[in-house]
Image (cartoon, rainbow, N blue to C red):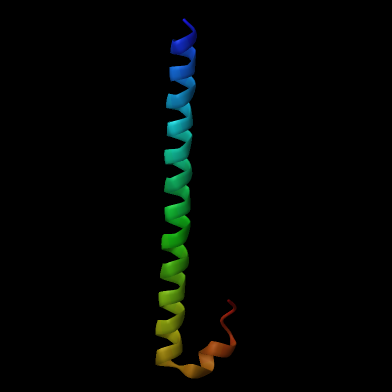
Length: 54
């Protein structure tokens, strides 16, 4: 029975890793979108650059 328990914990670890990776990639995606938007706005009107925080 011991190996089953180990196996189960490995599976849950993998699930958590996947969930974590999903969260991280989503974060990265949003920050990239945000930077793209910022760059776009900055290209359109340089004076907006002052009002947009990093």
